[in-house]
Length: 184
Image 1 (tube, rainbow, N blue to C red):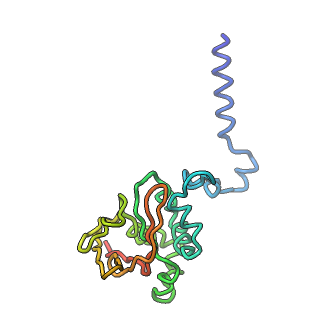
Image 2 (image 1 turned 135 degrees about the horizontal axis):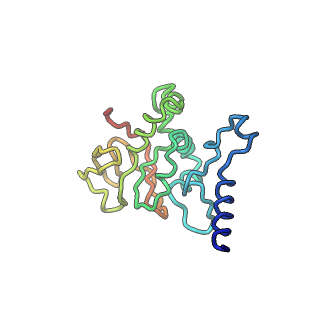
């Protein structure tokens, strides 16, 4: 009898915690807007920074961070990896035709924005000798983008790698251009 009471009490607690209050239901409140972003919402000041945390902490990647948030793909940048992200700096976005960034940040363009941003990520970690001249890197969009070396300079497509930073789940290469994928 005692175990039945415990089960019933547990069930009442579970159901009660899931129930909307009358004031919430009548207000039409959107409960998804306060939903945590999975691992992307974890605050951890002790561990090495993941790719998303590095991007947020880098002022010259603020446009990229805004785009990642608008596309709602933060969770990709915090996954265990390894992952290589070719991160366009703010001036790379500024170089796009006028109005492009503003248009892409609109909610109705979220899918297209996510596709463009995904073209900047590659599964695995590519740095140093792995970025050899003539190599083609498979991007998360399914495209292959060639690597080119010109002296000490390294390019992915037409974008020059400006700096490289290690993250807990991969590597971030800051680049000077946006890698616009072919339309599918």
